[in-house]
Image 1 (cartoon, rainbow, N blue to C red):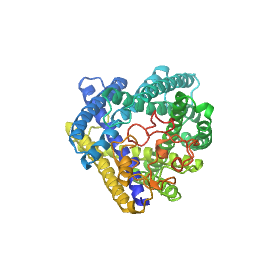
Image 2: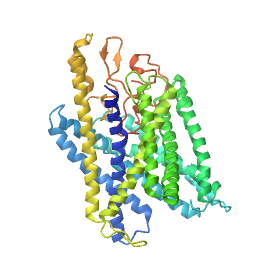
Image 3: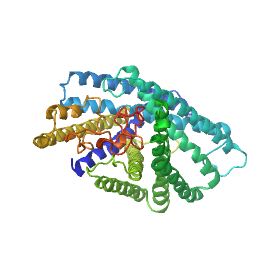
Length: 490
């Protein structure tokens, strides 16, 4: 496939999916806030965040039930089935997003209980140390639950199937949710140190620059050196549980680093430069400009590969680490930017908007608008994937006379173009894998992209492995779902 086709899929995977995720987070929050305000319980953020999580869990179950019904009625390999399959693989975001909100709520409640405030700056009463210690235990608890859920889902044969059992689906949703929760709590640990040492906000901005340098070096070391060496060590990767542990480490490391970077960029560009020096619009424009620069960086990396691949760097560990770090930054920057856009839209719909200090209530129109935006984005994501699959079929048909093979071309093509096949990764690998070829039989072969893999040296020397330790596809189809299946050689 061309660089442009791959880039469209990259935008679908990282930009559109994240806009959908940011919109999803507001639905449960809006419904929960409205219910809590009517019950005069708005002063209880933790129950409200928990209610938001429950609301989104109910919504995702209803949406999945309807989607499965339509998916089963659609013809095999039809466009309708491809679109619905993509939607069904994406909806775990309905649980992941409110889980991170819930993490923020109970961490803030803990800070209040121990007497530490993120806005307090330098303190001498020891409250920051207590908050850091408890926050660390909360991170370890989230990570332990993550590993336990990973072990459970690993044993589920239908974990990557669109038609997975309901128990598998729910377990997988919480598995992915605890992935995000683990990354968020690790980031919170680091922020306690920075905010406690830096003092006032301007000092935080200055210290934040040093923070970003330190975190970048740590993340780069883990992603480009430490974890690849561990994945290449047969003594470490012999046990499946160890492989899963390494994959989850990779996820948490890159999550915490990317979250810290984008949070600092937002504070610096949007709040400080935009809000205090010029205008919020100017700050927002600068933020979007950085996002465009990152997309150009992703394009440059893809252009450097023989097949214009945005995820598989064909064994180059430094480029693979850069690739992973860039798409995580793209993800979070899209989340921040679209989240702010949705807040502005919601405020514009509320007529009249609440005054300063007034109790905010969410109208049904706003909730319906958010639901409509989410469904539209889900359909758009699935539609783009369906178009890419159709384009891939056309390319296979065009290249078919040039193949030298022993198997039937039709069988070879359909084995990995079928969205219901075991190796299909939702809506993300249709084009990035299209130019991979197996030199043993000269037929076009699918390959699991780096986006689905933990970075590691490959013991599989086949051309498809690309020099990496290739793992099975992740569960779901969203940008950062580090599946429990990562770490198991195909």
